[in-house]
Length: 286
Picture 1 (cartoon, rainbow, N blue to C red):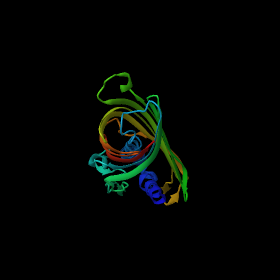
Picture 2 (picture 1 turned 90 degrees about the vertical axis):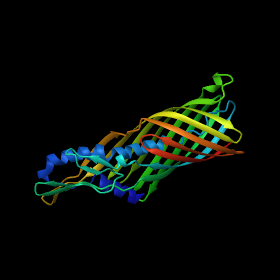
Picture 3 (picture 1 turned 30 degrees about the vertical axis):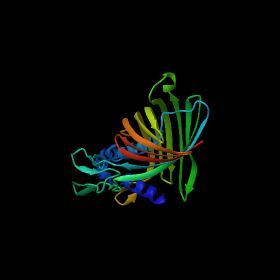
Picture 4 (picture 1 turned 120 degrees about the vertical axis):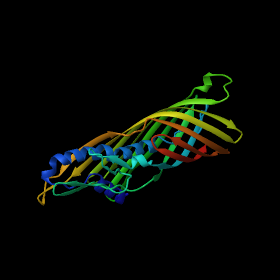
């Protein structure tokens, strides 16, 4: 985690520039904040807004679920580069090589990316249901690894719609979720907030349940970092800079299946949105 944080800090924001390029740096900084970082914001939303359900059935008496959700998020090619103001393409956070743009007296070299096409991750969650409603909780307390600290919190509320419609051949439910994640290091703080609303349906065929849903979602990313500049070889005072931007998350379609083996439920689904996510879940129902 420390290496990832340092890499993120170094390639995302630690750009050294001379005073004679001040106007150019201001333009570069804006491009980095938006073009370079937006796919990262989108990834956080794709991650935290995934895995919220594998069935639209909600217990009317009492239900408890303990789940471990794993996922692989795929980064499309068009999110690996972005265009600068002069039309030159350079790497985003997930891209490869940064562009070298000729300027008076030399070149401006833009930061590279981490050169990844897919990112694996996971999340734990529990859910409690009664009277046709379900509350889901995601929580990772503050964890310190050397000089890096991170934590996660999420909550969701789900309600059965099909309970009001007799003889409906499928189960239907609606759900709202809010998730936040923060990561803090010596010179960098990242916080993300994510909101999602979905309607989903499912139908069981013996041990097999097929499910699908349509979800509207949004994500915001707040970054605070310390930038150190130089002028004629002299180190300038550190400048604390705050950046806020939104991900490209908007609508996703989910299609999946679940296999019920007594109190154990295995599920997998594919999520089609700004980024594609393949999700698998290990769930214990009581």
